Image (cartoon, rainbow, N blue to C red; front, side):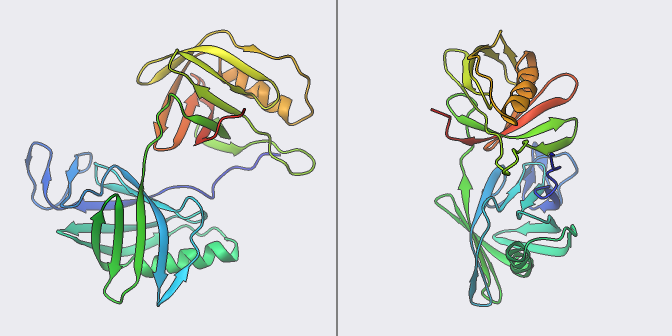
Length: 274
């Protein structure tokens, strides 16, 4: 049984940037859809949360917790469970966080504690310091958030581990066996215009002609093993995607591939199968 992965949804924060808009002087607020240049190099970077200190105590940070601000003045936050949103303005080295909103998913105790701590720290006026790909946000009371810039992964040469199956705008987790083990699949694009990896059961290779937005796969060559479920089910789904032309997008360290009918899969940068 697959489970819709709603726990890592992104929340968009409305960001009004001080400075100048692209090509003209700004009146202090970014228009919708325009690019924004702030006084600090904060945009178009995924900032991974490395540590969180609230009330003199260090809160455990879940894997994947991050904040991102794009050049159009929107930011997104990942906490591992609920999404937190807020209006943020930037002036000089000061971020002012307005009223926040959050989704209402019931979270495990550790994630719930982290989200509360993050909500407490990410509020009011915060001093921002960027140095050597590190960002520190510090509140007036001494609470602080330390973040580091995550390097984006290139399509070619990265080992991509399949993480989800896509159907339109819905993402589902990979199938599991009776013991609760998740099926695993990987793929790596090479400089010679080929792709190879593991489909969940058999290993495969194929030609892969790429443009900025599409990949055209040639006929897939694979081994011929018969494997127990859920490996075979996952393999069949992936083969339907690795057939002809698909659209793709690399967002930092996440890859999505979609066919014309909206089916596809998502993958995360990792280590390719041996």
